Amino acid sequence: MTTAALPLPNATTPLLAVEHLTMRFGGLVAVNDVSFAAANRQITAVIGPNGAGKTTLFNCLTGFYSPTIGRLTLRHPDGKTFLLEQMPGYRISQKASVARTFQNIRLFGGMSVLENLMVAQHNKLQNASGFTIAGLLGLPSYRKAEQQAVDLARYWLSRVRLLDYADWQAGNLPYGAQRRLEIARAMCTEPVLLCLDEPAAGLNPRESGELADLLTFIRDEHGIGVLLIEHDMSVVMSISDHVVVLDYGRKIADGTPHEVKNDPAVIRAYLGEEEDEELPPEVAKDLEGKGV
Ligand SMILES: Nc1ncnc2c1ncn2[C@@H]1O[C@H](COP(=O)(O)OP(=O)(O)OP(=O)(O)O)[C@@H](O)[C@H]1O
Image (spheres, rainbow, N blue to C red):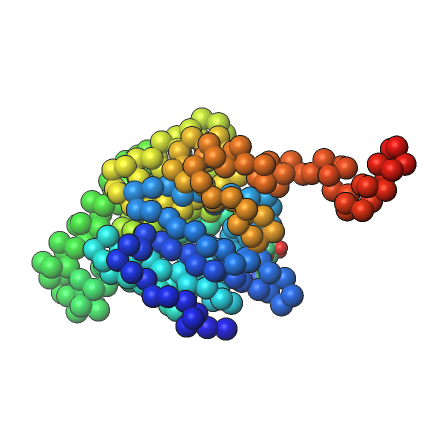
């Protein structure tokens, strides 16, 4: 399938516009005609019960999957526009400046904490090295770029309270610290859009609170868009500007946390139908006639 029939983005396009996204795996429609927008300087949460299609949506946005149908437009604040559904994953991170973290931590466990953040900046360093010549000769331009990369890494390590652990092997950090390091690593790529897949999974309430503070700091002080998949509703409802709800691959609600929380379709998706509401109308009528 192609996306040719969809309109091209215009000047009012938000940071991210997802239009008619559909992802099929054989007969299974994991994401079904989903459209929504995510703004710059906002936290947009994507929530929904297990299997609703949230991670599949992220995989389409970040080039892991090529959508069956749909347009995914990212518009940088400077006006540069990218059609993500047409780009390979490495270009989505390099050129479109989309960073992501994963449901399961994917750090380089054998490397130090600092090295994990330096690896995240390899594109910048590779460019500065003139693809090894300047790097090998230790030219000032390369040394400057390297120092800037170290400074940025140290900045994010201090933001996530891991500066004292810079030399630790990343795999030896406690779980919550590894989660924070993943976010620091993503931020070292200087993204325009940060996609976080269940960053609060496995955190205790204190760590979840700290995570919420970190994400609001990133939004407010770094002025980027954050797309957040999260099951921890205390985090979602306290920090999101906008919530999109998926269920069985379809969007069932889209609004402020307050609107979404009170939406009957969302309550049904999470809590299930009352037993007699699930009955087909003709059966319910029949039972009524029998005085049941
Ligand atoms: N590569 C794949 N091949 C086949 N089916 C897939 C694939 N990836 C996901 N699915 C299916 O698509 C549906 C949506 O899965 P997805 O992981 O996107 O849901 P989710 O909302 O992220 O769930 P969770 O909250 O449990 O992580 C599920 O039925 C899943 O089994």
